Length: 356
Ligand SMILES: *Cc1c(COP(=O)(O)O)cnc(C)c1O
Image (tube, rainbow, N blue to C red; front, side, top):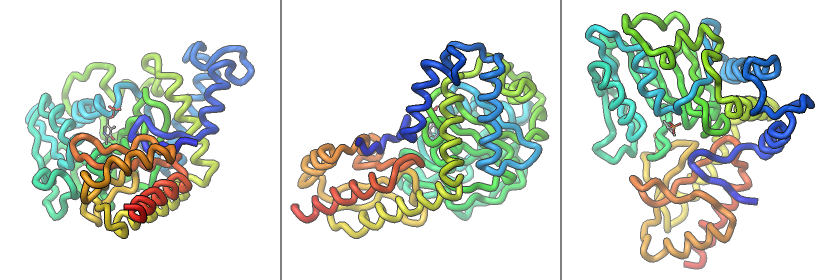
């Protein structure tokens, strides 16, 4: 068994792969593959409806919100979120810059209007979540990135905002409970907790749409997609189906509260070893540590990196190398990574110390 710490696309439940493989050959005894049937067929419309309903159920989405499965990744979401919320005349979007993904979101929004960066943790290579800044009311929206996948930081609570709150939750959606009613828009690429790459989920407050006074291209217009029940054009059928299967797995396992409990336990186990082991140190401020993407380094790389890398590879661990902008290691621990895999990693870290 491979212990898959890949940052995304990432580990998904084994049973999802089995069901998906079967449905590629023959979906539900129809004699057709899930990827060769019409997206307007009764069978596929059921998949789309079920996937949308599961998002609502798992995240307790209140009435008045619509769930969409679109394409373009969260990277298109940066622009899509801005164009649906920033006023045409004198538009201003406010951003908290927690690194890489939020910086990219800021770049896209600047194509549409003014951007106000409320706070940034760039001064310390994004190793913390800024706090204590004033949240403005005279902006069209406030945009956050709930979890920084690359630097390994995570908002443990969200700022209160009178302006619509938009959030890129790509790398921690479904990992813990969240009060959706605080947000006008949540978006997330599928490939980090929800399913295979190829679709992006949008959870949008209906009454917030249609207020910018802009002409929005149809494919970027959340109102257009909403009015067509997420079927304005051919949806990414396999990615939606795989997401549906993964959400069914989450539900069967006890839902998001159970995922949260497991993720807390996994994070606790790994961070306590990072803190205990004299050879390692974490790279982020302890209070802002991500439960999804712990990042850490060897204090003396020259002395230990070659041997540590060999040891974890021998233990069948995959994907532990840190992102090039941080270096060191990143152990992405999405929902489907079992705690057994974390025990294997911790054991390797202990063994390195014992034999150093
Ligand atoms: C991975 C990631 C993205 C980019 O997602 P794509 O689907 O590759 O466009 C954006 N934001 C966050 C927080 C991510 O983790």
